[in-house]
Every structure is written in C-alpha cells, then in structure tokens.
Length: 315
Length: 315
Image (tube, rainbow over all chains, first blue to last red; front, side):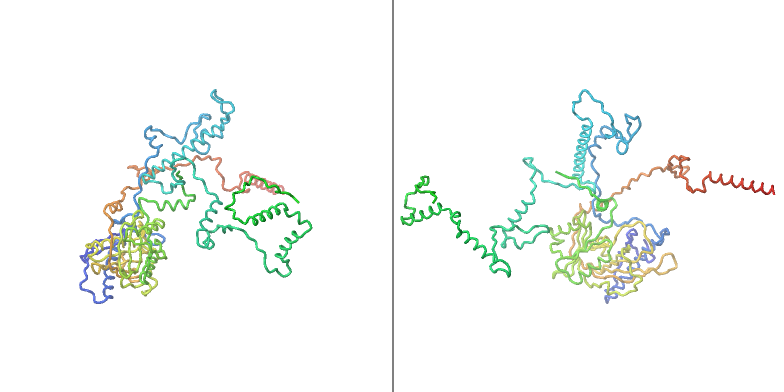
C-alpha cells in the first residue's frame, strides 16, 4: 500500500497489521517523552494507512454498525495443532470397495411385499413382528427358535462391537481417532496365564493400610486420613480397667470385683470350685522337687508316659 | 483390554470437538503464569496482559518452581498445562538476579514447545498511571490494530521472531466480518535499537475528516514497556514447515436442490408435501361461523321478513 509520503508500508488488512520497515530515528531522542511521542506519531501513520483501506471497503449496514468483510490474512503464522489426518478405511469400507457391495437404506420386505427401511421404526425382519417360525427338519425338539433368533442377534451385536473397537484401534494408530472418542485401557496386558487379577476387597485394603500405618514412628496414629477412611482398629490386648476412685453415688466397681472373688473362695461350696486333685498333685510335685535338691539337668529324665500310683485321686 | 469411551453429555462432546485439530482453527488462547520469584513489575505486567486479553487468556496465580522453559526437562509442566487448558501461547514471568524482570513468550505446536523468546522489561508504566478520558477506553475483546516500526524487524532474526510472536499474541480471533465502530485499540511496537523494542497500547479516536475515512488519533492508555531481547529459541526447520502447512482445500459442501442454468440463472427446487384439501385444518371453528348455522340464520331472517311482510299486508 503506497501512501502519499513515498513511504511503503507492508500492510496485512486481514490481521489489521502494518509494518514500516523504513523508519530510522533521525537522532537519538533527547528524552523519553520525545521518544514516546515519535513512536506514537509513527504508529498513527500506520493505523491511518490500514484505516484508509478498511473504510473504503463496501460495507453492509447492521444493527451494531457498518460491517465490512475482511480479506484473509496474508502473514503466515504457525498453526496450533496438526492438520486433521485422514481416517483409514474401516473393515466394511475395504470390503465394500472390493466387492462393490451396497447396503441400501430401503429394502423389500418378503412378508408384506412392501419397501421397508433396514433399521429403525417399522423395519424389515423385526424380531418382535414374526408371528410364526416354521419348523425345519434340522431343528432339534425342545429348542426355542424365537430365543435362538434373539441369541443370534446378541452374537452379531457382540461381533460388531469387536469390529468397531478394531477399527478405532487402527484409526488411533494412524493418528486419526475421532475427537469425541477415547480408547482407555481397563486392564494391564496379561502375559502368561489368563486368570483375571483378583479385585481387592474393602477389608483387605483396610488391613493393608493398617499394616502400612504401623511402620510409622507413631504407629499411624497421626497419619492424615482420606475422607471416608475409618480409624484403625486397636491392635494388641484389649484391657478394660475399672475406675480407681468410685463416682459419688455409684457402686465401687473395683471393691465389688474383689469381693466377688473372695466370696467365691470362702463360700460354703468353695471346695467344689477347687480342683482338689490337681491341687494335691501340684503340692506333691513341689515337695519332691524340694526334697531332691538337685537340678533337673543332672537327673535322668522321667518317663512321662508312666502313670504315678497316686495320680488324680479325688478326696 | 481396551474400552471405548465417548462423552455422555452433549456439552462434553462439544468441548472435545472444539479442541480437536481442525482445518480452520480457533483463536489461540494464552496461558499466563509466573515462576519461582516475581517482582512487582513482572506481576503487574502479567496482570495487565491478562486484562488486555480477557476473553482468550487463562492466568494461573500460583508459583511454578519446576518450569524452566529453556531447559530440556523444564517444559513438561508447561506442556501439561497447555494440554489441559488448550492454550497454544504462554507468557511466563520471573525475576532473578541474573535476569531481572524476565518474560518468556512461547508458542506450542500440538502442545509441545514450538519456539521461545525471552525479553526483559524496562521502563514499565502501568495501565493505572495513564490518565485519559474514560469514554475512549477500549472495550474488552475488541480486535486491535498492530503496528511495527523499524528496519530491525526485518533484518534482525530475533526481532523478526518477536514480531511474529507479538502478532500471534495480540491477534485474537481471525474474523471475516468486522464492525467498523468497534475499532478502538492499537498496539504500537517500535524497534529503538537492535535489541530493544518499545511497546505501548493506545486507544483510537476517530475524528471527522472530509472523506469517508476518518482521521485517526491515538491516545496512550495502556501499559507501556521496553522489551530487551535476551535469549531465544527458534523452531527446528522440519517442525516449522509442518506448522506452516495449511490446507488449501475448500470444505466440500454439497448444496442440494440448486441448479445453475445459463438461460434462467440459478434455479432451486422446492418440495411441497401432498395436500389433502378435505383434511386441511380450518382456522375458525367457532359456533357462529359454521355454514349450517349461517344458512339457518339466513332462512330464519327470510321467514321473519316474509312473516312481517304478511303482517303488514294483513294490516
């Protein structure tokens, strides 16, 4: 775009861009303000140049104001994403090319001799519409042909899903997966046996988490818990200690406990509690040990299978 | 074990399609973030840049310590953010002793770093320090004029790259139709030395002139700063060629039912469904309008008329 001042600016109206390659500062500007002023004046000239072309475009009136149609931008800027890659043909499309097969949307129906659509409402060979299936010689008795038809359909649908997955995989390999589809791996590729990896249950996870917690210095007591995670079950012995000082008006539980034991010992029927035989045995053993005075290591080991003459004799 | 995942809502599908690679791309979005340490200048520059680019920018407020754009490993975080926010330009601000008031402008291709340019900020004047008539303040999201002055932008490779990056940054969306009343801002970049560029943002005042083209006046409103070129990284040739590739194909749109005739010009075909005249719904079904009623009334009037006549005659 030439201006009157014999200076050629490079303008890109599509981008509202203007470039003046010929400006040179005549002298080093004395102050900052002068520099700024000069830059702004130069800028004004450039904007004026673009505006000259813009306002001379044919404009259409609209609600907001005059609209002009901008030409496409001339400066080449790099794209932000790659160009969309062509999809590789699907299995059916390859087959269709070879065999020149066609799947029409409207097919002739055998039973009614009309033309019905292949898929959708009021379709050809709908499973629900068949009233009678004639028995053939090859049919086994006891086999439901209606159920068989439904089964066949399920198998066909399953096969189609597999084919669809395969098609998407080849498309993904070529980098042309459709934008709204994502292929996600749900399990690791299995090498070796075909056993499915077992799913860990809630309890097992809790146990493992507890194990991990014990490895910390404070036994996992102050670990940050995830929302929903239950506090760890108490490990080790479970002691219940009664209060030492009884509460006002309440029964002294510790006193009650010892009284109960004493009562049992000193009661009339205390001999029934005591296993007298066992008590005698223990007493006699102790006496014998005392008598001998020698350590057990030097003594020949007693044969425990031999029964003692006065063992387990009740009073 | 792959699974096909498709979006379950229409909104999700639309978002995915918007982000997919296309022939004609959307406007590039800018990601603004800062590094380990930022000075007051850098943070205000980033804030004001975000305000200038309000519709197409995303600003992160946290520090990012592991982003080092010029190092080979330090870009992974950037690429991840770019992928998640769908931003192809980023502005990374930081402040170190070695590089005070540092700004790294970078672009992405396919969410990988395409090119980088590092500039230092000097003589920064914030938006708020400019006083001007509020009526001419530019509106948010308006398409700006971009002006470059100085031979450096053509001869020096770093300045050339800076020119391209600044164009990409300020451009916004590529539009076909432009409202002439909505032109209210301009960015002026002047090369004041082979390594320094003066950047300022001005509002446009349109003044009456004799012709349809108004006289342009620029008033400085926005931030102004000096950019000192530090480091840069150009894209490698292969990547650059790929990114600059543009498809010249026009989208093949089949326009149905339109013919071109040399004699008659453009002909169109209109299909009208079969009209069954008897079954067309009548508009006015109110009681008084029905034909039988009308006819009945007319008869009655006639009789009455004749009756009255008879009376008259009899009298």
